[in-house]
Image (cartoon, rainbow, N blue to C red; front, side, top):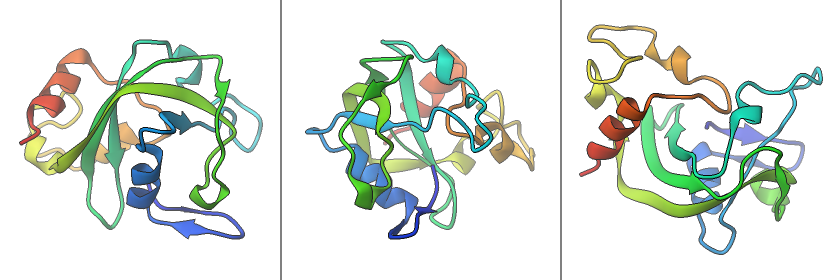
Length: 147
């Protein structure tokens, strides 16, 4: 995730994340289609029980922020919309939400993730896009790095 804005609001990615991790909502809005009408990559592969890790890029650094499990998958479900937080009207329901008190800097995992080899300069391109599949091994490595 990263910073976002519309005609009325502009928010930093970290603020959007904190809002969406509130226990009363337990949902993550997803824009299903791109501007030209194509389905976003990997949306149709989301299923109940999938484990997710949240990643923030931008001026705050490149950090993993926390984890959750999907309560719902594809097709997307209607969710509560908070316009000031740039929510989408459809998305997935979450369970087992765990926002970490100490986010994990991706740089600290250099050479330990399949997409971030030692000395790799372009590792961020693997995580671009709304939804990116990672291996179970990479998920465990990220989760185990939480202090």
